[in-house]
Structures are given as C-alpha cells and as structure tokens.
Length: 201
Image: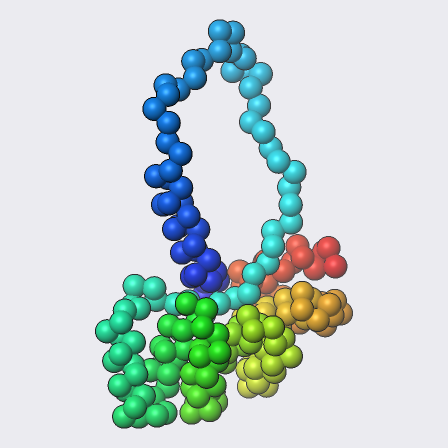
C-alpha cells in the first residue's frame, strides 16, 4: 500500500504554480555568461543542510480521477435509497474530505463505520478526519478499534505512533507503537520510515 498526501495540498501547489507561471515574465534577454567562468572541476552544487524527513499520516489512497459531480450525485442517490450503502457513504466522505469539509466527511465516515464496523478503510479515513478537526483522542480510538481486530495492522500502528508523538507528545507511546510495527512488519515501507525517527527519539 502506498502512502499519499492530502489531495487538496497538492492541488494548491499545482494551482499556485500555474498562476505564477503566467505572472512576472520579463522580455529582457537572459544574462550573459561570465567572462571567466569557474572551471567545471571547481564548480560544486549547493547542498543545503540535511533535514530529517517529516513523517506524514498514512492516507487511504483516493481515486482523484473518479471524483465528479456525476459520481457524487449518484452516491447521494444510492444513500437515499440504501442508507447503509457503505461504498457510497465512503465515496461521499472522500469527496467532502478532499475539499476540506471535514465535519461533513466525518458524518459520512461515521455512518459507514456504523453500517460496517469491520471496514478498515472507513475507520482509517475517519481517524484522519478527526486529526484534521483537532480531535486526536477520537482519532486514536478509531485506530485502536482496528488494532483490536488486527493487532499488527501496519497503517494503524504507523498513524497511532505519529499521533501520539505529534499531537499527544507521548514519546513512549509512539516508540511502543512503532516498535510493534517494525517487529511485525520489518520490511514494510512504513516500518522503514519510522526506523530513522525512532533513532532520534
């Protein structure tokens, strides 16, 4: 499984790049090359100081191409006809999450979890929604529900450790969660990510 970042952040970056690319352009010619350029053997590219990579929450992969008004309307219709239609509820939760309507996405994810308590993706998405709503305790509860069924679920262990560390300042708890992740899934990409972080804690 692949860790992804929030779609709306990527969209903002892309939009900014598009807007900026059309602004501030100058018709002046490019600067001339220096008369006595530095010999190639002496040119050294600037290497900024290495910073530890910031860990990010594991996000359930969203199909960006699949989001459209037609699909949203279709999911709404399905939910009207079948209030416990889990795929449609998750789809509506995802659509609202992407545009940062977290209270609405929480509502749909909670309905999906109530209809199918064992649906891991719904719980993971609900947990992440709680984080964006500044509710770390609620987020951890959802992860614990998953871990009660699958005690070594890698994505839940990864996110739980990250929430404990960053939101709860619980270093010991984060270490315990990540140590369990590494012990159960030593070759998992998320386990590889936390190994370096554990060395700094």
